[in-house]
Amino acid sequence: MRRIRLYFAPNVELEFTDRDIALRQIEEIAEKGTAFPVIIYGPEGCGKTALLRQAAEILDSYGYKTLFVSPLEGKLDRALWFSPSIKDIVLQVLRTFNEPLSNLVRIAFEIEALLEKKFRRPKIALILDDLFQAVGLENAEKYVKTLLNIIEYPLEPYENIVILVSSSEGITRDRISRHNWARMYIMWNMSREGFQELYEKLPDSQQSFDNVWRWTGGNPRILRELYVAKWNIEEVLDRDIIRKRNLERFVASLSKEERNILYESVHNPDYLWKNLAEPQVQKLFQKLIELNLIIEIWDRKQYLWIDTPPPECDPELGIGKYLAWQTPLHKEGVRIILERQC
Image (cartoon, rainbow, N blue to C red; front, side, top):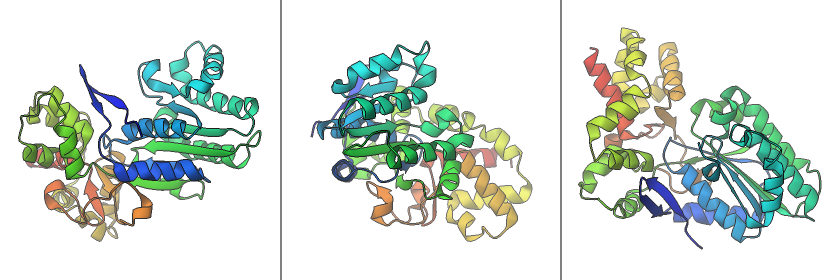
């Protein structure tokens, strides 16, 4: 299987690395198709987009008419990838839109419908990256039902179909899980071994890997931010965690009791889970989910995961049995603001 090359940083492209278990899972999906839309949910920057781009390559090699759409990308050539065999159909649909970048989800659905009509019993793969953030979280359920209808009520018979969707939004997980319209899988940051393999491919990887692992917890996007910032951890922590999520304002809005709960959760994220019966804990828990600071990981059965689940407990990385901070820097950013505002 050809591993694609991906943009990592200015003047740096790296080959898709590790994730062997996830790639075997994608191959199994290619062989069987999907009876429901498959939604891959996980921390921001854990590598979902990279996996979906590699999945598009795999599905194309299995004979699928494959369309990959990433609506949040700023350039059309990065936001849209398709099998060479469907180029004419894609260009036909694109010509009907004056602003294709702002209409990529509609374009994807129109291309999918044409594939059903123009090919006899085709194998179709539709891959939508960060769909819910693009269409609005309030529309998540509607779009999942639309994707299910594509599978269950095709315009014309198909041989097989695969629909893959990625999401970093914790609140959509709860909304979608209320219905039997999709299959949800969790994806975590990279394993230490795979992450070290990625790190060692960097042109300048002279920073101590142990430090990089403690800072990132295996998150490729945080690694990229550190690399671009010339390994300035304070800059990345301030710009990409504290300021981006308005942690100063968030912590300032909390009551004294909520701050105490949050402080306990910095040291042990499971503190929230074990005290969810308390109304203030429930409220704080929801805020942390909405801010994409923590993630639920309570069940580590392999069939619920894409690739490898995280360890059951790693306090240094902010991982508990039931909950985890998305990366160690998310935990550290909250700790810094709590101490600054005490």
